[in-house]
Image 1 (cartoon, rainbow, N blue to C red):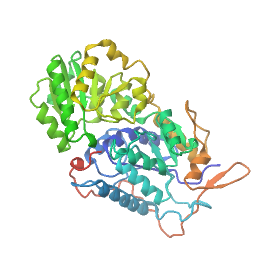
Image 2: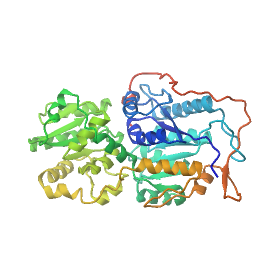
Image 3: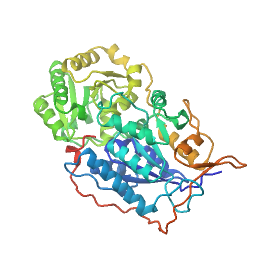
Image 4: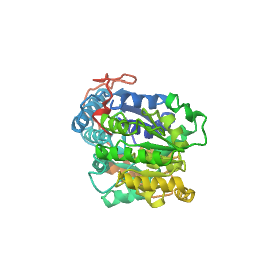
Length: 459
């Protein structure tokens, strides 16, 4: 018996990494015959997010416009909660007062999908819970074990993990993390990471770099390239400076290697990178790269030095070794598989590790002995199949890891179970209101500012 709810699925995102990792899922939903995505962007990284979604053909229903200079994490969170509340009320009306009985016939969302560990994802999950919309968490179960590393991401994902009804976990280790925190294994599903789906799509296009400083890369296929990215909040200050110093030393020691550094626009990061590396001939500093060109650069690299989370998963899919400029990582599977090595930000440690990889072919090859633990490029397909099963009670999707139990997911979301001859049904009752749902498709809520808030929010 199909679940009697609207087949609209909210997808809320605010940052460029969220857009990159959610576009494969949005595209799958757009192609689905019965499920319809309603994409809401927060406006944090507006231009970067718009570029990713437009390039990949993803339609946006609304922009909450919360990005502005000087925005604190608390202000961001409260703005997202208020903005999403306003959007849902305008489009669908008030939430059901009780999740029992029969669902009303308008288009109240079947689920709200959030991704990962940003403050916008945590805020959207809180808002969806208050609005009685079941939350699905993509990239669920990543943990470092300390709430200050990374900050604020670690506690954000734990908060979303407590709220979510359904957890799409990239790996079995992620599921184990959730189970240790009291999440029923029947609400978890091993899918792989949608970032691998996105990377495979992007790398296959080999678009032109389109920048004078990278013109040499268009035809040079032999010079070894080391890609460096650093932006994490916990590395601001001395950590970023130490990474830049390590790159300077490596460039001096390896004149046959070129170092490409896409510089994060946050002023604290940019100042440190330019101060240390502007005058180093072997180092190419460039502005943040569009996703398609960065995917090409990643595939071209001999080695990656990064504090990014997503790159820790993406580079191994391209057989590229990764040195992680952090003391902890929520991607422990990569460390165990040997695709990642934690080096922190100490220049001596970074230089020693990078020199070993650059100087010893066997050390380089050791990073790709094991298959990438983060997925095979079919994560979005699995998540859509899971949503279809939850909404329409279609056959249970297959997986190589732990499966999920529909009843447990829906009961956690607050649906009342009613037993019938043809099996249990899960329903919710309407709120007694006269609201007429507004079709806000293609209506964009004007942002309060067009200034990119990178200098205030480091996510």
